[in-house]
Image 1: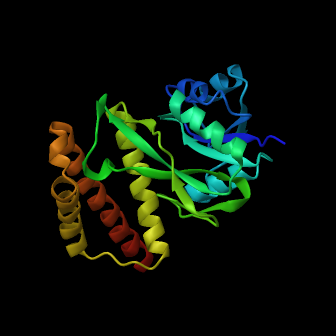
Image 2: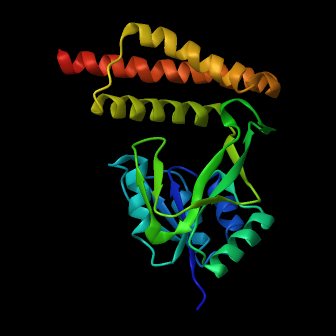
Length: 251
């Protein structure tokens, strides 16, 4: 008996991305969008494409959204996809073959990152393997942001990669920048992590050095430098937010 594949996509204001994303996985048996409250045309586009659209507030972070998504399908296999990702024809054929064989493994997929129209192969964006394809009952998620998948099966890597159009506008970049740094600060605060002013000074410098020097971000040219600098700002922002969260708690 042939096994079914469901593609699960988390969305929030993805009107510019969602159609190309959905069309790249048209081979799937089921496509489900879990939306956290889009106010653009995401829902209308999804309905035009005749995919399942479910509203669910992100009260438990990204891991909570993904765990909720898993409950919305009975398909034996699931593929998690972000709206700014595209499955290539070669990868689609590889995924279909895996589902047909139904061998019990979980699979990582290489994300080939495209940032503002430029392929980025170094720095913090490479190599960028993400655990995305697995039997539905073998996976669960934990974490508020930068969530992690927990699987009960051996992990293999697919031969073909996907395209990841990670940022196409600075407005979108800084929207995610603010969202993620806030979630990270709240998560660290809940874990009891403390932030001192020295953390605000040293962690950003260490982050820049790791991205730009240790991971060879300089090889990506100007965009490699820009991304390394913004990673330092990202690191600073989450520690600044944690620092002031602590002050509010202790006030």
